[in-house]
Length: 255
Image 1 (cartoon, rainbow, N blue to C red):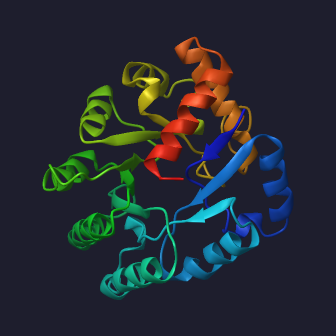
Image 2 (cartoon, one colour):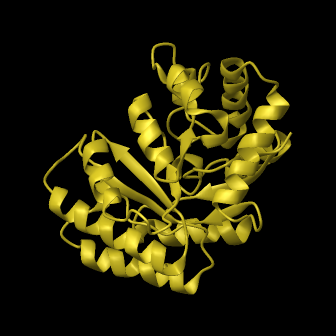
């Protein structure tokens, strides 16, 4: 079986002591590609160094994360565009709206989200969307781009089936990770209704480890655990789930 981890922050300090071992474990477990979303200007160099170090395995995105939107957001957005112009990236991300921690910069988050969507459309790349306590706001912005052939993924999807249906109807996949293994998340029922053809796999490592590693550092080698859970949910073989989600990922990100 082959897998693609469509969302991992492998460049973060949590992996500094054993990054090579983490990558080797992932490859040994069938993960052929790991897609790296950018957060802000400070994470670009670390991300690109991994793209060079693990050539063909780690693939870069360029984006300004909503929780990184502060007073300097305009210069940060210019950096997103510079990176995309200088480097062969696969997506604009991660971008979106986050109202969980702080609503101070909602106006700036909305401006940043719109601008990055417009840039993605201009260079014909998918977007990777972060939405936390903000589905209403995210969908409101996406509604402005109906008919523009925008595509992408709702990363770490935790919404209702109505949210899932709306996202899918807009041309998006749902990024499913460790949360689907949590006993009371309810995500298992949502993804079953959403359909396997609309899902891609992700870890969001080092965050959101699946059971039985919940609360510990997440890593790319845990993707088969998520795949196994989806196989249980859909009552299909692990091989079939892996094949479908792999194909979904390659098509979405043009890999």
